[in-house]
Image 1: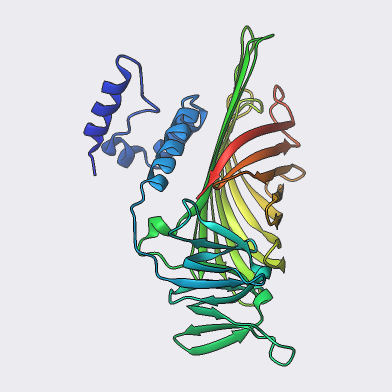
Image 2: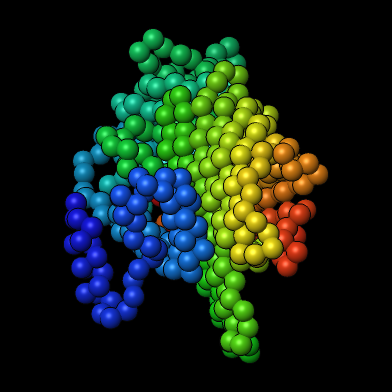
Length: 397
């Protein structure tokens, strides 16, 4: 692990005389004296900085490097048999979105097979398993051919004995890794466009990571977009968010969110949103998830417009999310939140993030995204709506 001084020395030696600073230098004594105000100024300066896309690009590069820095290992010898008689030997990594992932010695990339086409699975590994009814268990899994009298063709062996269920009930399966870093799942996306007619350049990056356990899950996402036109104005949008779920019974959960948003089009230096609530999965299968969340949030806003002062508000929270996966085709992700004002009665904010992901090869994909932020009471010089459409090439890990 390198020190901060060594990291700074390395970056400056690589960049020569160019400025690599990404924000203000924070002194610990100043933090103790100024408390929350210093913390807010730090996030504000980071989020409004046009250097944040550079930070996102560096993080994306580090993720690619870390995921490709793998070494040869001896596989367990798990066996998967398909309906057409094919027999695959290697290591079963997990089940996600109706697709079983298998690592083998005879393929440079993982093999991905349709869970509905699998007949038998033999594995000695321990997995984190999610059922369609919301139950999460840990144990070894074995699948065998079922029958009309005994459709429960999946056996899970855990600390409390054996559990027999039909295979459609198993919606997700993830092998337990020896470290937290190897347990992470996510994707990185990047896109850029240039128009010679008006010398306009646009760039966008997205980074998503998720970590799951039998009792809870956590996620983080960083999205940046930047546009510059010769002789025109520059616009940028930076959004850093964190989320979590504490699983309850019968597909219910407690959800929490923390979001930092900067938007130059809405004259928003920084909006911090913190809150959570209660939610449920309306539908949960190997290919589809549909869930809702209701609760309360606290927001603190600072604007670039002098006429609009910084303010804090209490708001309601109502959100829905829909995810659909199709084998060999791609994915659809739809998400929308509504924040009706409580302390600022009559004000309503909405935000939506939607994406279409088309699978390519070797975990690469093409992403088409649409997002929109709406504020019924923005600063007088700002727009009520800020929306965007972007495309990118990405990689899932």
